[in-house]
Amino acid sequence: MIYEFEGKTEREAIELAASQLGLETDQFDVEILENQSGGLFKKGKVKIRVHAGAEVSPEVPATEAKAAPPERVRTPSRAESIPEADRLPIEEFEAKMVAWTEEVVGKMGYPAKVSVLFKEEKKVGLKIETDNTSIIIGKKGKNIDALQLLANVYAGVIGRDDIKVILDSENYRIRREESLVRIAYEMAEQVRRTGRSILLEPMNPFERRIVHTTLNDIVDIETKSEGEGLYKQVRVMFRGRK
Image 1 (cartoon, rainbow, N blue to C red):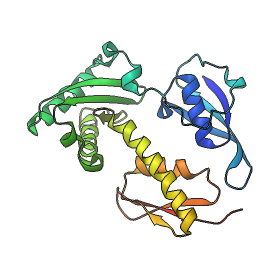
Image 2 (cartoon, one colour):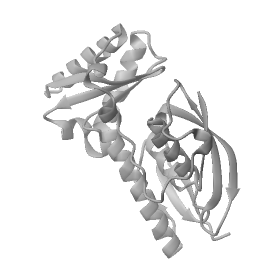
Image 3 (cartoon, one colour):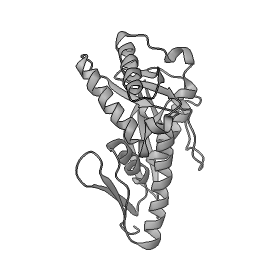
């Protein structure tokens, strides 16, 4: 189904769509229909078209949707919105991925229970429950990212390289995203105040996209990725007021 929303910024419009449709922001595709510049710091109006994979019932008709309030709208995480029964593996592929993940984590020395957290057309999320969550996640999520990479390699070995496997534990992914958004805004304010650019910590492509998207609507701030390999750094720069 297709819906349209408006907001003062691209991010505000996307968050409004997620809130009204009851979806996560990575559960639908976004097409920018209109992007009008406004005042000194923010673009005045952004209109987006949302392509949702299945029909949903928005709380407010999309054509009548207004901009979200200034405060950040928190949408329920997948773990909160999906009933426990729906997290159990149903298909053979999901059962194999659950068994493989439990075996690998167990051989690392950390017994764990793995279940299906969410399912999409080309994506499946697995939830790892263990008493050693901090170790499984690792510093800045590097351990769980490495496990996720291996899980996707195994998915290809069993003939399902068309499906992306996402591993999570204790809602680390959503907590990390919220942290990156907060850091991005803080760094943008520091750059504006000092006029000097700031180079952020090395991040994977998904995390870098969060920073770029968060600051994309701030007219006097720009970002670019620097470095080689999978983990690059984002530079936040001041480009002057227009």
